[in-house]
Length: 382
Image (cartoon, rainbow, N blue to C red):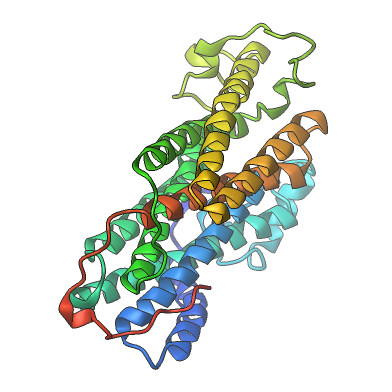
């Protein structure tokens, strides 16, 4: 494959301009549809829309990783120094001709760049939200520092995206990028709920014991997601074949110390050693065994919610959990089909968002400034 600079800032200004143009589409839609309400009402609608697009971004990011398109454009932020694969057609053709099964192909380049376009669009929308929140800070149901924190986290995510490419899919960076996308979903989800609650919607009674259990479930889910990210970024999904046994054994030979060495390149272990089969099995088994804990805790939470007359939340949690178990088993039994793997990633994002909305909506009622009362209507969710 032809050599190319890993970091090429030549197209940065043009990509930024493209991101602004792309972001103008959802911004115009929100501003026109919400023209009868104030700035705070428009921000509520923009938050809901950005939350929806961020969920799509997380899922498409999983598709980028699962389709091995993370290095479809081997430089950053453009593609061979160009804004799109069209401008890099000759470089892509040369790379694909030199290595037909390699990381660079026409389709992989487009998948990678579409992911970047969507990420940049979300970034611009969050930048607009942060700026507008400071302007409307007297009428907001939260501090403008909250969307500012969201903006700062988007910048961190951008850095993770950069190092994902320049460090050639370094597992710790890729895992952090995946988990960081879910954290962005949490930040936007909380902001969305606060807008809803400020209008008297999106609030429900959650008994103290059930709320504590929900926090435990969120913590357990976070650990399981980190373990799952480590499995995916190390390509350890097929390290175990068969279920419930792993490679025909209940307790296969494992090397956790090598498998969970964090600071290493893809496929390498500590001290320059290659990543052994035993290390990959250890990564896989950690995720599989902790899944038993996660399923038990989340299923118990779903049961407690149904007992507490929160059947909608109970049903959503139970359906997502069942889908996660089914897609996880399909990955192992069917040999990691793309649809099942993508569904597993989307299901994890769905569980994160569900728990975020549940917990954020069950917090104490907000104390709103008097100036806000009746100042704007509830914005429809996207």
